[in-house]
Image 1 (cartoon, rainbow, N blue to C red):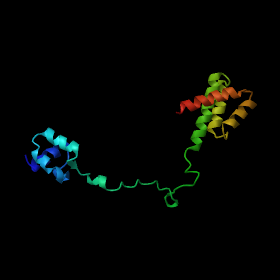
Image 2 (spheres, rainbow, N blue to C red):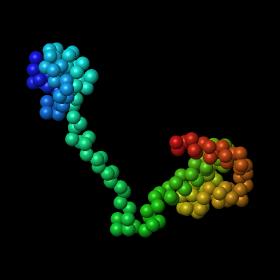
Image 3 (tube, one colour):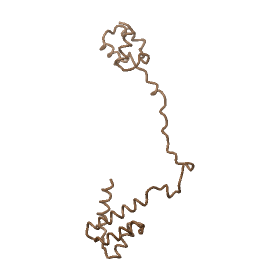
Image 4 (cartoon, rainbow, N blue to C red):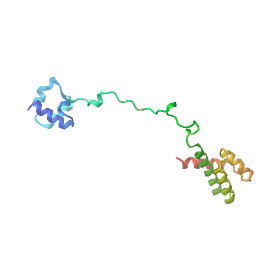
Length: 157
């Protein structure tokens, strides 16, 4: 038929505008002979009719914006910017107490006493909590501590 017909049908097949199509000059005779959509599909497959890249593909990709963490953006002391250190510490100590209570190593009054001490930030870490518990007569061996730590790792995954 005509080149105009081929351009219109090819744009419908490729889902692109007519102006974005490129036709090879060597295969113009074949393009003019194309009558059906299947003929146009064959020409597209052979590379006689090609869609140009869209404009956004031609340009370099935009740079991703980086996190601005310089001195001018900082508000608060370095310690305040560390995150929730106290929450993490308290949660781990409370989990340790809870597990010891479930194991039967700590009774209710002792649990309450140490729970309030943990709340009052009396212990620097779990190790010091375990030392204070040992002074009160609570014996916890390494295997039990490993079991509690493994439970904690699985709980917070």
